[in-house]
Length: 316
Image (cartoon, rainbow, N blue to C red; front, side):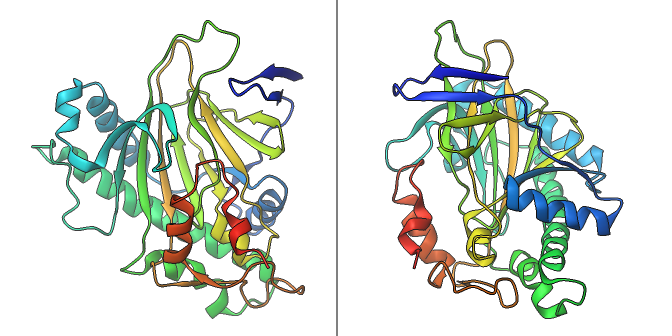
C-alpha cells in the first residue's frame, strides 16, 4: 500500500509498505554472497540471520543500555562527552533521540558513570563480535563482486581496514523515547541521511521506526523482524569503492507514540589516513569519484547538514 503524507517541511511524501528487505541466511555462504550483492545494488540494505553473534552478548549490551537510558538525566550526563541528546550534528540538526557514542579503538574504553564496568565490558564484547561479522560480510561482498577467482589481497582489503589498529570505526547507541504524535505529521527521531563509513551493522529492540528511501520522496518502513537479525547497509565509502555499483541510500528514524525504540549501530570505517578509491577489478568503467582519504571525507561530511548528499563533493 502507498500512503501519501505531508512532513513538517511541507514536502509531499509517499510511504510504501509493500517492499520488504531481503533476509539473508549466512549458513549458506555461497548463496548469501550472491543475495548480498543483489541487495546492495538494489536497496543498499539487507538483513542477516544466523550471523554468529552470540545472543548472550547481544542481550547483555541491550540490557545495560536500557538500564543506562532509564537513569535520571543528571546521572546520564556523568557519562561525559560520550552522551548526548537532541542535537545530532554540528550544523544544527536535531532529533527526538538521546545517544551514546564510543570509539572502539580508544583506550581506555570506559563509561565514566559505569562504576561496576558492566556496561563497558558488555560494549567491548559486543564490538569484538560485530567487528568479526562486519569483516565476514565485507569479504563475502568482495568475493561476490570479483567473481569466482578473486585475488585474496583484494578480496580481504576492506576487512583489513576494519581490523587495522587505527580503524576509525564507531559504535552508537540510540534511544528514541515515545512522544505525543497526535498530529498528522510524524515526528522525526533521526533525520534523513546516509552513513559516511564503509558499512553499518544495526541492531534494534524490535520496535519499528527505521525507514529507507531508494527513490526521492518515497519512504519504505523497515520491518524490525526477525528480532534475531542484523540490518546491514552500504555506506558512502563502499559506494565509492564499488564505483557506484553498491548504493548508499538515505534513511531516517521516526518516533513511536507508545514504544521506546533503541538501536545499536556499528559503523565500520578505515583509518583516517586510508585512501578511498574505486577498488581494482570491481568496475570496468571510469571512476565516478576522485580519490580521497577517509579523514578528508569525514571532515567534509560532518561540516554539512545531515541530509546533504556529501558524495557530490567528490564526484568526477
